[in-house]
Length: 285
Image 1 (cartoon, rainbow, N blue to C red):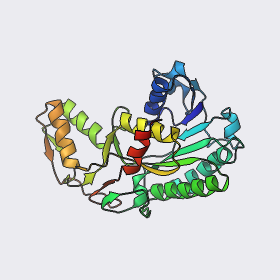
Image 2: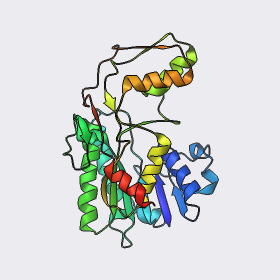
Image 3: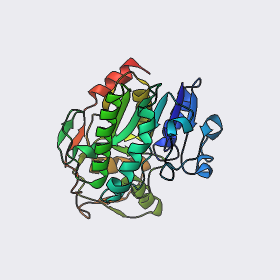
């Protein structure tokens, strides 16, 4: 099988490529990103075909450009984590639709697996399954949800296999230094006495990046079509997550609660229903 991974040098992408290299030795892995120099820093670089590409820069048939892959795992998305910026709709969405179109319309019908976001659900609470109505309230989540609609309609019209893999909350190596746990790690390393944060009462669904990457691969390689939540199914409070990290580090730093407010674009207590995901993993890939 020939597998193309976009966003291969990103936070999740390099974990996805690494999983494929380690677990699919007989497959041809094509990785792409905008920087070959960045790609060379990863241990998988010499084990894949890396093709540098900025698909925003030029319109072409990317299915042909990437040598007709049997599976596309599309992780790339520009401009994160600026969720509130209009460019997600005005600039990113049209280019993303154009990029996917050549794969969806290809005669050989490669599977197209694209990552979405739990923010498509909007402000919700409780355990959220894939069939829960979407109600995005940021430009980013609205653009993602619109791309999901385009993928579903186009793939079904062309009898093409597809997945929309909704990511929840992720932590791990390669994460943005502006994210919660990297900021905490930096504060611990500096020897700070306190760590300013929100009230920490939010319940969230967290998974390590390696697990998220493995789930993405198993979903994409499966015979399952449609939307799949990539989640743990087990809520944890942000405060507990922080306190657990402090304990693991053996640090004496104290969470300073209530310094920051809660984000207006997400519910206080929500997590993913992982029933469909567990079925995919049980069947194997």
